[in-house]
Each structure stands twice: as C-alpha cells, then as structure tokens.
Image (tube, rainbow, N blue to C red; front, top):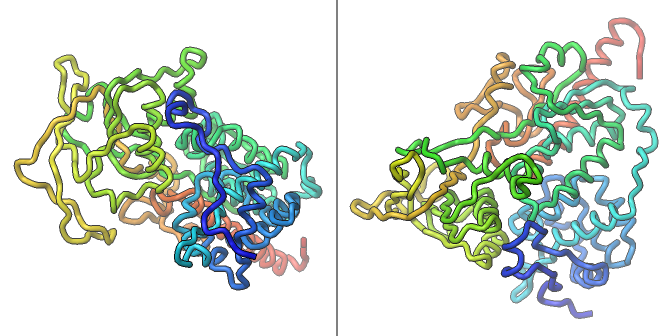
Length: 479
C-alpha cells in the first residue's frame, strides 16, 4: 500500500478571525483524519522517534492503535510514559525531536508523520470519556515514603505523577493561586487552553497527589519543615524571575517583561477585564524584544488585544530564530512584522514618563559565541527609531531567589541555577532533587518533563535505599 507523501491536513482558525479571539488556533484531527495520518507511520522496529523523545513514549505502538481505531489502547500506551499528553501534543517542539528524526520524513519528497497532532488527538479523546474517579490503589499511597514537590509546572507534575503511581504519598507546593506553572501563566490560551491544563492536573490529583497552593517555600513553609515531614524533595520551580537588557529608559511606563505581560493575560485573565480584576494596557504600537517562543506568544497576544501594529526585534537573522517554525508561521499569518539583525539601545520618554519609541541599531553576524551561533555585532552609525507605546522584553528569565536563599546548602552554577546531575536530578543536598528550568535555564516543556521522569526514578532509588539501611540497623523491614 502506497504511503501518502504529505501529512493529512489539519483544521485551523482563519488568521483574519483568530487575531480577534484567544480561541485555540489549531482545531485538531478528527478520528478519521487521525487514522489516515497514522497509516503513514512505517512502524520502524528500532524507531528513532522513541529514542529522540525525552520521555521515551512508544510512539509506533500508540500510532498503530490509532490506525486500528482503538483509541483506548492508544491512551493506555501513552499513559505509561507521560502524565501530560494533551500538553505535549500541543507545545512540544516535535519538529526538532520525534518528527525531526522520523524515517518517513527523511525520504525525498515525504513529510514526517504528524506525531504531535496524533498525540493530541489521543489525549483529547481520552479526556472526553474519562471519569473523575480516582485510580485504583491510590489509597495505598505512602506505603513507601513521602515526597514533597516544590512547583507545579511540567517537571513537578511529572515527578509527582510518576511517584504516586509507584505508591508514594506526594504533596505539591505551589506559590501561586493556581497550579500549572508556565503551562498556566506563560503559554497563551490560543496555543494551550487552560481547560486542557486543568484536566491534566486533575488527572494527576485523581491519582492521589495532594496540591497546596499559595505556598511559598522559604516564606509560608520552611525547608526545615519539609525536611522533617518528607523523605525527599523535588524542586521544579522553573525560572520565572524576569530578565531585562538594562538599557536606558527601562523604568518607563510601557516597558515590561514578557513574564509579567503573559501572566497578566493568561493566569489573571487580563484579556477579560473588567469581568476579571486584572487590567492589561490597551496598546496601539507594540514591540517585542527576543526571538523565542515567548516572544511569539507575547506578540500574538498583543495583536489579539487590539494593537494596531506589533513588531518583533531580533538581533540575529531568520535562520537563527529559536522559536518553533509553526509559531513563527502563525505570527506571520497574523500580521506580526520582524526587524531582523536589530537590537534596542534606548527607550525614549514622551516627556511624561511613558514610552514613545525605541532606538535600535543594526547588527551583523560575527564569529560563533558560546551557544554555537554567530555573535551579533553592532554596525556603527546604523541607528533607527521605532515608534511604540509598549515594549516587552522576552530575553529569558532568571532563577527564583526567594526559594534559593532559603536553601543555603544548595550548590548553584555560575548562572545562579541549581547544580544538579542531569541524569538523576541529584543536588548537593542529599535529600533534595531538582529539574527543569531551575536547573537548565529556560528550555522546553518536554525537557522539563524528561527531567521530572528521571528524578522520580532517582528519588525512588534514594528513598528505598535509605529505608533499607534503616531497616538493617533496626533488624526489621517495612517493605
């Protein structure tokens, strides 16, 4: 049977309509479309897509189940590897991971299998039939030990879900009023609906995971209290503190970080003011500094909030753009403009303390820097001005200083993040493990999940080893 060269088309909102709303852009596959796309999979025995997946999902197996029309089997396969399938199917960079190594996609003239879209299909269909009942055996949690998880982002949710399935009593401590971390406050509704995140979290708490919100470790609960009440702790708080370039005019009204801007919109529903109490500025001309997914999210959000013009200022060229290809193409379709090889040097004051524009200089690419990419170098005398009443810096985040100051024994690296074993999450404090952006700096959701999965296995080994040692000394065993 011949294999289709191109992917099965998938529905999307029309660009002219979607810029007026925060509804999801991609509409997803129907089951018939999913089966058609699943039929393209070559079912490789030594599937490179599995090797390239940070959580090692058995991709050929769940795709074969879709092809056979057995969505329940497909969901069962995925549940053995991931606690956040609907999230992964929407925001993972599949083009550089599983789909990037797809053997079908390597054949001349063929597109890779749409693995991410198929994962989303399975997760969404599974959630539509899922009951709210707790998993069998959840009442036995705690038989092995108690684990605290600090942060309810992708790494924290993953480690919590994996450990509770192993039989641990797990409590997540979340500083904000709503769980989900970057999944809730960082990624816009049009890419990842909050209802999907809430359902993923509910599936994990239904397993028996306890969730405590408004809990700031180092303020409302101390590290000492966690140490005395739990056998181990996982830190997965992300890197949510804003970072600025620090150029003149940064303190002007109208200049903000992407983390603040997106949190107001996403978690605090600023786009629904006054129905919700968090206002968001009604900007007319907006510039975004940066070229990653966060920059795309901020730019596309600004357009939906009614801006007349939105432009992204990026100091490298299109070829070096770190954002996902899909997000870049969606931004172009929605009318976002790009100022390539440009960098802000000063924010201009309108005379009242508010922003009136941004002075930039043109750049050229020199020798590669530590990242392996060619370093942007300013071109003398190339300054130009962009009118703007809002500037949003999306150049990365920094570590959570409140938590880290409460854990003086934790060794940090030169960038201020927790130093942890990349394979196990082990830190300089024996009973504390860490993973995700608080270790790597800003990265992807799926890499944070991979870190959580690896840490769950390491925590299990650690707790069992400590209890075995304790039993040996007392002459008894408890498990």
